[in-house]
Image: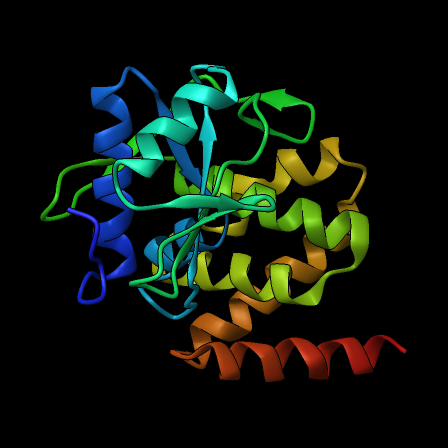
Length: 201
């Protein structure tokens, strides 16, 4: 199958992951689609990011993707039948300096998708916020926390290890507000974060 015009991004991720697995290429879903899955579609993306944990050379991966009609263009693989592109960020699978050894799977009609745990996706988003003050990444982390029932307390040690004790208190306050006001859209979360940042000026 090489025509994916009617295939959702999650189903396409499953097709790619399972096709690569048939070629003994192991991948784990990270990035925006992992956020989409764990935020229960509050956040949407058109990119599939998978880390090649088999450390295979580029040749076998390129050949396997070509069998699905995807050709490499720059850093990404594209298929003319879909706007969705696939990228394979460099291994190792890590959150900051921490190598990730355990993952889970997201189920779909086209098979399981190896994926980071929700808590690790949150940590990845928070690192982007800590290092680059990337507010969209903070909003994405909050979306997962709210919709995947992960409390700030579960992330306290991580924030402290990153030297971000003050940011932990800020994140906990944002999470509390999001839960109390039952925010169910990325726009609501974005407005809340923007307003709280204005208060810090």
